[in-house]
Length: 323
Image (cartoon, rainbow, N blue to C red; front, side, top):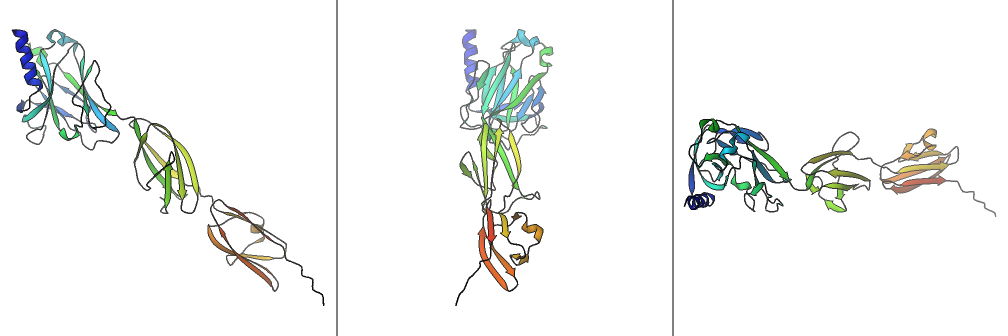
């Protein structure tokens, strides 16, 4: 009869759909962006509040390691999780009502792990030492309250005064995040139109962060002027890689070959003798070049594209006329 009664109590607690009273002093608030470990006690309250959840996180794991001194009282306590609180949570408040989301006897010889999915696309699954809160997204159920309550009598006060550790940790998707900045050689963000592709797939830029699978990736950058850069980067699960890439412009190079004595003008600027001896870096687009020797003048327009190498050779023609 005692076993039957215990089973009925367990069933009622596990599937309670009605608001229940939640009372006790608050030990603290667990958060991924704040305290991830809290010391609590039997009949105390511990809040779990998750805000601004990273898209890299598929869920969280609650861990309650057990104290060996409490092994004699195995199955004398149960851990409860409550959601749908009737009022805003405050660490100064000790009285709430909420809906029971989880209940399990504490196995004080080991530990209790609870997996809480935060995405419908999660891949978390329980094992011999863990339990899955539900199979759907629970991100809208916070804050929750965790408490440990006695379910038998005759427990000494020393057990009530035992410190119990409650920890929270993220469970990541097998994905990482790329935060990309494309800069010029002055360290300024480039304002011109840029096309980026990662693993041959085009992405918006500026944009991001870019959520990608872990491992090695290839990034290709192309400007509207035709300049191109490529690099390789890697992502680790749950981590953000920041790339500040200085775009190495490969401007067109112009070489001019001409005879001595000719004066050369590039875009109406006279070139020096030293400039004529080397390749000149010019801007992409339209240009004009003019050669002069006394009254002799000849000019030509040309266009240049990024990465081009242009050679202009000027050899005056000799005209022979007979009468």
